[in-house]
Amino acid sequence: MGTSTKVAYYMSMKTKTAIKIAGSAYKLAQMLGIQRQAVSKWGDLIPPLREYQLLDKYPDLFKKDKKP
Image 1: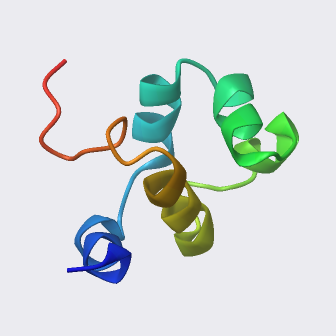
Image 2: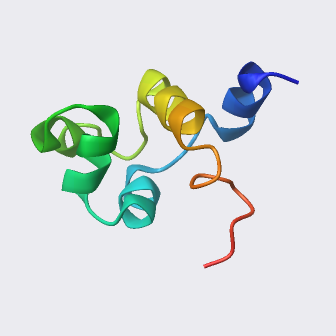
């Protein structure tokens, strides 16, 4: 069970959810090494490669079963 299994499981993370987990669009952008403006252009869902990056770099932060 590698990361590819996780990616298939999570492949529909909403941008709003990721921003909420990260704390802000700016913080989410910093986590990915991109500009905040790029995050604002994503639409409803995170692009698959960015989602993969988040899950690879921060697996505990983006667990689907995480309680608030």
